[in-house]
Amino acid sequence: MIHFSVHSAPVPIHEQPPVHFCRLQQRVLPMSYLVVLLLCCAVWFSSKARAQTPSTMIEAGPMTSDSSADVFFVAKNGNDAWSGTLSAPNATETDGPFATLKRARDAIRRLKTRRGLKRMVAVLVRGGTYYLNEPLVIEPRDSGTEANRIVYAAFPNERPVISGGRLLNCQWKPFRDKIMVCTIPDVKAGKLSFRQLVVNGKLQPRARLPEKGDFLREKALGPTSFQFRKGDMHAWKNLDDVEVVVFHSWNESRLRIAELDEQKRSVRFRDPKARHIIGWTGAGGPNRYYVENTLD
Image (cartoon, rainbow, N blue to C red; front, side, top):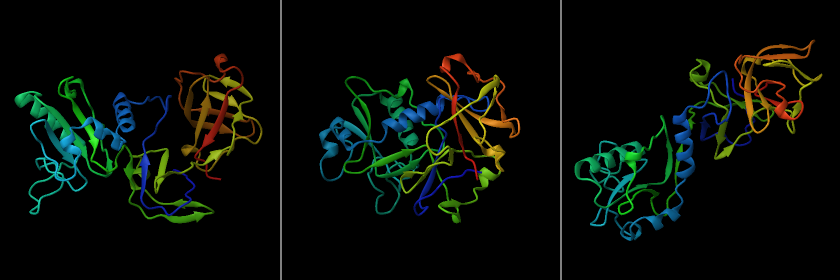
């Protein structure tokens, strides 16, 4: 179960995949996800990217391929079975833009295989939010040349957003105070886990203790356990959902709890192969930490 404080009407909502720089339950962030993260940072597609496209593509009126460039389009109302050479569906809806960036990338690959890169190629993405179900991988073979570039850019005066998140279609209802709850079948079945929730474009705060600042551990009890100070940690009802974020020097670990003893004030974590052990001297003193996703 994931606990957030929602401060506004919960529509539309999408979750974001975990973004962290440490180990979690013996797993590290896959390289393919790093590709997506880098792409998402670069593909907020400022309209300034128009300066990198041929002037014929940014003038008012229809946009099509011409003698100076090949142009493909991606739109929310597109279809990957279409040619991708029209900026909007035609009157009979038999042709129009692509629906995904992946399809546009593949079209460019086929174009290069068929006749080589003889002129500039541009992919113009219409406004809207595009959710990625899998990483979009851009390889060296997807590059242009100094003479003939390959450009992905926003359609003039529109703002596309490429999201690694997932739209949540669920029924939200009040729980208590400012907390809203809903049931997500994939989370309940153990198929989905996430740490970030965006509502109406705003990142929602995850339940955190302390609300400000950090706790300090009392002393290390082993590589993956420590003694906490009185009152800092409890045997929460949703202990399996709780994450403890432990700071080391310039990085952090997100750890799940295996065992917590309130009388002994001890906590032991599930990860037996943590790279940065509790009490590592490089931390410069007692490890700072905070606790996330508790339900008090």
